[in-house]
Amino acid sequence: MSDLELKNLYDDFRDGKTIKAYAKIINENAKKLKKPINIMEVCGGHTHTIMKYGLPQLLPNNINFIHGPGCPVCIMPKERIDHAYVLAMQEDVILVTLGDMIKVPGSNGSLQDARAKGADVRFVYSPMECLKIASENPTKKVVFFAIGFETTTPMTAVLVEQVIKQKVPNILFHINHVTVPEVMVELIDSRDEHVDSYNNRIDAFLGPSHVSVIAGSKIYEKFPKEYGRPVVVTGFEPVDMMQGISMIVEQFVDERCELEIQYKRVVSREGNLKAQALIDRYFEKVSLFRWRGLGNVPNSGLKLRDEFSEYNAEIVYKDVLPIAEIEDHKLCICGDILRGMAKPQECTIFGTACKPTSPIGSCMVSSEGACSAYYKYGNIL
Amino acid sequence: MCLSIPSKVIKVSEDQTMCTVDTLGVQRDANLMMMEEGDVQVGDYVLLHIGFVMNKIDEKEALASIETYKEILEAMDEEERRRAIIDDDNCEKR
Ligand code: SF4
Image 1 (tube, protein in one colour):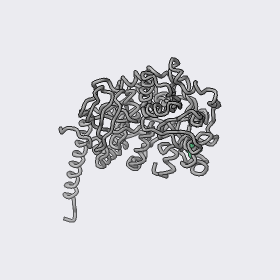
Image 2: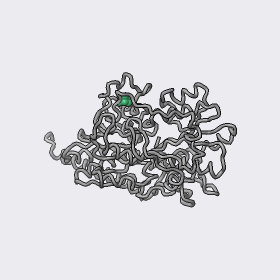
Image 3: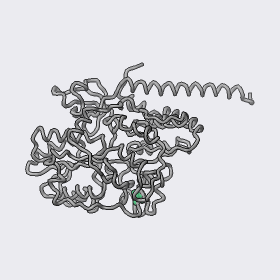
Image 4: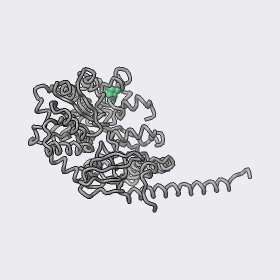
């Protein structure tokens, strides 16, 4: 065995021949399936790989993908984007967030629009850039609008810790971190408020890659055990995904229902314990977080612990922040799409009133959402 | 947004809070505060996400996966060769 080189980590997991070899194995095994299987890739990163490498074309007809809730910005309800907008419009505020947020429309417009109106909005690569912005602008309040699943939560926690340790007087947080297992439960085990149905067609999950790097595969243990859904934690590269899909198909052929890790090179059962401890130190669960397209999902959101309220922008600016919830568009069927009950074309405003340039529902907001993927790639999915 | 990039550590700061990594020829700094002290060393492969090292890449596991892929490809090549020989044996035009 030769030693690992950096380029192995890129090339060998994108190798066209290996992808085809797995396609062949999957096609052979799929012939033994008793019924078609629907696999949900929970994470938008997987959806991206599926589209980029045209994976559905390599797979037999009895293996279908259901695209998951996508990305942290897609699921952000409008009222929280409105919070960002209102905060950005405050004279004394510099609103800082990650680049993904730039175009997401709230009811008054996006952060890009706020900036066009003169608001100081900054899109950063890393949350730690807030420290520099804060020290360069001592008369302003820097509000970090924090988004992301388990993958980015510990980074926000590190920033909170530094703000406290370094006694930075002018950084506040607006926390929108959400957690993955709770929404997976919601998708298979609860009533869809929008269509009044308990139905879903999800047979198995491809577990997210980098959420699991932090949280560990242990967060999925209940899915095979309690809900009868196999989970294979899978990496983002196309070879990873083909292997992950192959492992799921094998489970069905062998009539097994287990949690497996394909992405062993970075995911362990326990995950990154230091990161988990950081999350735990600064954040606690909120009883409900409203997901755009899905509605209220119990225990799926995080907030700063009460003892850190002085850093909580939602409390500090509570007098100016709107509180009303904003419903999804009546015609939007994202909830159904996410449960595998409908395809985007079945939405009556797909491609007309709702397009990537003027998204109405969550599945159209980012390129990782199902509707936007269908819009871009037509029928190949 | 959750994509992370494999990189190689080429320097660790004295206080162990930062490191410099190489991402296919591009060098940049990454924060180490999410990793236990002393856990990340020069030469390690790590996953980078929004300016932080989020975990180490297990070299043995990566090599084991690559080895599995090689074996699968070899087995398929072998099968194709065998099939080509059988096809050739059965060729009526000969
Ligand atoms: S096309 Fe737009 S409105 Fe229709 S389901 Fe998709 S996101 Fe919702």
